Length: 239
Image (cartoon, rainbow, N blue to C red):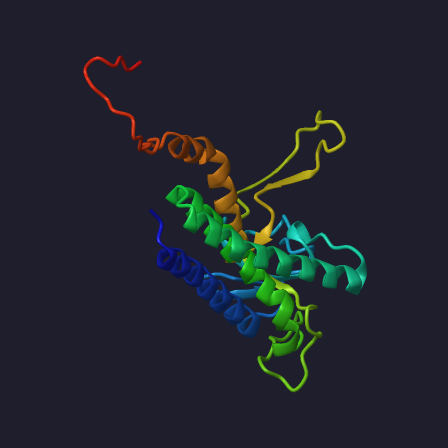
């Protein structure tokens, strides 16, 4: 059985690692810079993706800031940003209650761990949205941000989520006969993400892959015995 302290430890481990990486990137890298083992070089900003013509490895650290949801989606300007952050707050508060419930009801340990991973990732990105606008000044394409400046780059609930992991595993072009996109450049895997995003993704994917096992083991629990005052002897047939 997954114990509460183990779940808390997992959440704190992911949360601390996520924030340490984000703060390091925010205070050491300008926007849209690519870092590898040998050099740092500036690249044009193109929605967080390096140009196709440049030589690159499949694993990169590439600093971008996300003002909205996954994949950089956003809506409604400042009001939309605030609504999204408030929604994340409500989801995290619900997550605290839900984790307590599944621990109390002794759900499958794997299910509890998956929920913990999703919760840790949601909380990690919520911290960015709530506080990063207050504790950092702006990152630019030529300078790094300072932490705890006299004035931050945005108000409470208006911070940007820091993303940095970029895995362009495959770079190619669509065949010419492909409808609509024939001859266009193709890239897999293109999103730039952070550790919190990865934690959410791993939790969700594991739930989808193993949900039958989680549910099956819970449904196969031995039924509890029922006490009765009825006398049982050899003359009573039990079916």
